[in-house]
Amino acid sequence: MEPTDDMTANLERKGVKPTANRILVLKALAQAARPMSMADLQDKLPTMDKSSIFRVLTLFLEHDIVHSFEDGRGVLNYELCTSEGVCNHSDTHIHFYCESCQRSFCMEDIPLPDLSLAEGFTPHSFSFVVKGECPECRKKHG
Ligand SMILES: [Zn+2]
Ligand SMILES: [Zn+2]
Ligand SMILES: [Zn+2]
Image (cartoon, rainbow, N blue to C red; front, side):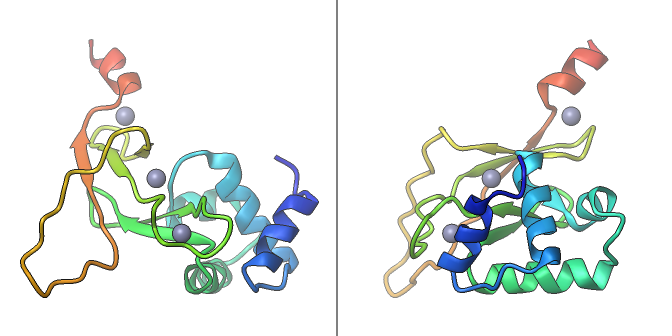
C-alpha cells in the first residue's frame, strides 16, 4: 500500500499530524497485514531508530491509531485500529500465536468468549491469545 491520502486523512481524523516518520510506521503496519512487534518494525524500518519508532507507537496508542496486545511470549504486538471514528474496541478480536515461527495472527471472524465478570468490574480491554502452530509451520513439520 502506498502512503496515500487515505493514510494522511486517517491520522488527521484521529488528531495526529501526519509527519514522515508517522506515515512510515503506519505504512509498515498496513503492509504487514498482521500484528507486528517492535523487532518486526525495526526490521521493516531500517532508516528509523528504535526510540523514534517507539515515540510514534506511543502517540498512535494514545490516539487509538493502533492497538497493542501481548503475544504468546509476553512481547507487545501492534496492529492498526480498524475503527474509523471513536474506538469502542468493538474491533477487539482473538489472536493466534505460533510458537514455531513466533508470529501473531488476527482471528477476526471468531466470536469472543462471553465474559460474565463479577459485579463491579468494568472491562476496558480484552486480550485473548491462543498459542499453537500456524498452517505454514504445520506443513513444514509434517
Ligand atoms: Zn481502536
Ligand atoms: Zn508458524
Ligand atoms: Zn489482530
